[in-house]
Length: 271
Image 1 (tube, rainbow, N blue to C red):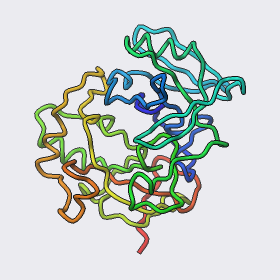
Image 2 (image 1 turned 135 degrees about the vertical axis):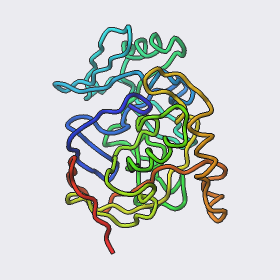
Image 3 (image 1 turned 30 degrees about the horizontal axis):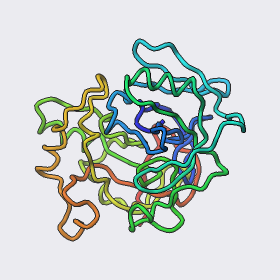
Image 4 (image 1 turned 180 degrees about the vertical axis):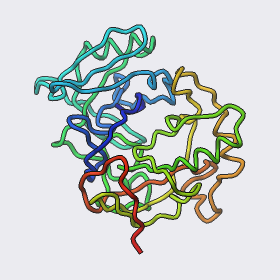
């Protein structure tokens, strides 16, 4: 679920539209306002406290002081399909029902909010319509713009050396974490292979206020680690039309060949 707590997995299918583990697909669920506009941790930072899982064909949601909720992943056809807006682009989602809408609204103590699910018959958003560096074939459901975001442990360690209060990988929400490389080495990767999956680097990820949400408390700091990143991770002037004044941290990849990746797989650079 977009902006909710990440799910750690030991292996995942890599599809053209991102990672899949069993019945869970990365960012295929979205919290919206009743008018269909997306809601993320930028507006509701406590979304990061909602844990997501799946069992027996059901999506499970858990949050502090809330009763665990299960809802079917395959929704009844009678549930309406809503027209949603994600970063200014139209996309559909099937409404997940009143019970989960009430659950999310109650937990956030705000709203009213709905939860929608992207189904395979729906039309994805074109990454190229969001950022021109993507190819016409690159598509996503509810991620910001890319099916894969990769970040290295070394880059995080480099940042943490500059911070008074350390931050976690969860602040940055990558779906692939790489170890045993140098800091920001991922920025230089173009064509890579992990397992039997081939990916193409598209652009570095420009970071926003969401990185300042504490993943353990749901508190929005608004300053760190963003301010420190801005002190040394701004883009080259030639790329300012893409990133403006946002600092870069992590890199987006598109999927050229689908397959399976697992923890421990080496990352190969194609030359």
